[in-house]
Image (cartoon, rainbow, N blue to C red; front, side):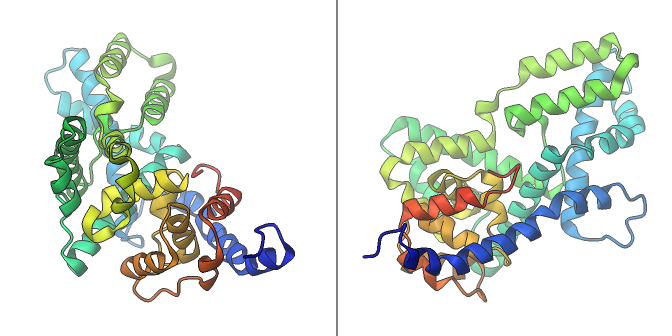
Length: 318
């Protein structure tokens, strides 16, 4: 077998590198496009479901922060206060690339979840693998899987409403959002805002969030986590987390890889995660039925696939 560093192998990988570069060019446009669309008052020309869902999640986050502020101030009509000022704060949140990227990834994940439910009957909440893990002899894994089931049900309900609970943000984004809220208040930041922020921080528990539970379940599966890379058995949420963890990518990058223009990235991710070439092709075609999985994948080792992915990682998704 040729050495991975030999000229012949490097030439064989050029089609993959070109495909990743083209994919990067498409992904790099996501942030500016989202910022532009969300800042446009007239949405009649932009009825796309993803944009609407990202906007809805940002509004939901703003509403929750303002409701906490109103309650801290002792205002009876906390919901009225939130509705009155929510638009302005949501617009302020639109300027956060990291928050937009996170909401965009969640919207894409839910879109994929609904598509797979329609196409293959994959339950958006309880997959066969999660059901099996709930009954696992390992009490820690079983407990995490049960908590995940509850969290996934909440996620499904929130996405149907185009909402995002503050408690479901990753820790760094939660902090950034509160700092953004603080900057939005500026010199007018009130005692109620200070008390509300402190209350929200004290109540926040990143480990109880859905994304943390997904990662905990994958880690708890140990060497059997490769089973989570079967989309029919694992379901969308667990599949994406296993793909991210085992391939060394962020979860956002794993979600973006399921786009039909990112077939090379998805195939490399699955190879990096430990699937053989036949299973890689099977999974790619399951997610993107009309795709043409790169033939070069068959000759690439998992370590080399991880290196290629690391080299082509976009800022903010690595």
